[in-house]
Image 1 (cartoon, rainbow, N blue to C red):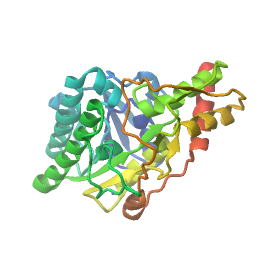
Image 2: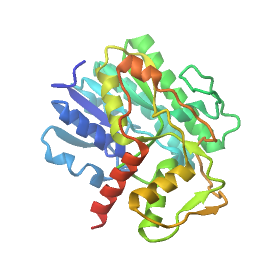
Image 3: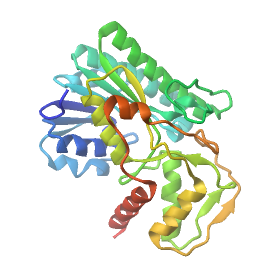
Image 4: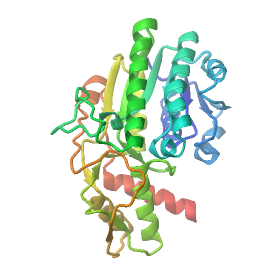
Length: 327
């Protein structure tokens, strides 16, 4: 399905990923992009630059209201199902978070079915693996949630449930889908709702203020940090590909420790500050350890996607964007 000339709906459109995905869709020649958001988590500032383009329509709506989705889906060729609660909002309001991640996606799929939308691209998460261990974590790896914190387990299971809903609608109604398990997304227009991306933001803010950055615990905890433009490119590839019905990792395949993140921020900022080690007292944390090893091989083989932005380049872009915001 070529992107050029088609109409797309993005749920949770007023978001970090939604805004960059819209940038990519417009650049690829999409005829129209509809951004549906209730602004409970998204912010108008994130998409302000997009509303200058006549192809972009902002729709204030809620994925928990099927009627909103039915209206927004009419005439759409594809839907990017981005709307959902991340770990921090899930911890703050678990009842609403479970509804949004489960019933909200169910409503999205129902609307796609009734509107005869060809394909849905679902934003899943590597949190679906829980604390699964392998030298290289592929999409066939079993999930392990028993050892996770309760909120991380609930979030991860909600994403697994979403993938199963997509498979059910593909089987029962022939609705095409691709589900993408995002690693830790960060970048320009970043919000404060993702635990791992927040660590980058908090580290930069301390360095900017001349305060020593903080490394939690022994600093060996690793995450796979992926720049938002690479995620947007993966979403486009998953929508346009001839292949569908797949679950794929969108990850760099590179484990980066908290210590490495802090020293990268210091290097990018040209700072001589020395980091401080502190006990990890976070009430909410995502699944992590000293090794993750997410494989990106399937996405490369199936949809021809590979990340292009290194952690240092991504942090450099993020810092440059922050500097434009502050002055």
